[in-house]
Image 1 (cartoon, rainbow, N blue to C red):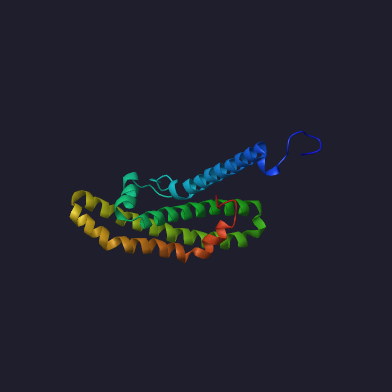
Image 2 (image 1 turned 90 degrees about the vertical axis):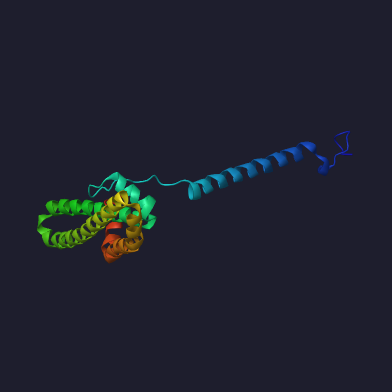
Length: 186
């Protein structure tokens, strides 16, 4: 017996303490399961919405959708990525022109960067236009004659995907320099 109480006290038989401990463990397990479910949802199930427009050029939405659904998801991703890069370069050109107006005595620094960026943007935009035109030809062929269109898809999807990837890779140094600038990377 405990000296201050009339009842025997056994620390292992404390019902209130054991219930509280079980309740705390149960709440922690539920929180862990909820957090794991949230993480799994965001990482594996939540998908980015389909982009059906290119910001740097006019294209039909159905062409972009066809590219993803019937040609290749890699081609679709490269198309979107190249479009994002061209838009990012446009923002950087605007920023450089703004800097050039602000500091007219430093025109040589800004002019060389603007010239290099304009040339690179022109190359990337021409590749984007070329690949989009070829994808449109495949799409129209597929609409008219499915078997011939499917043959064109199989013959050209790898080439078009590589063409976009090579264009992006060719300007990787310039792209990474632009991306380090918080004003244009958004």
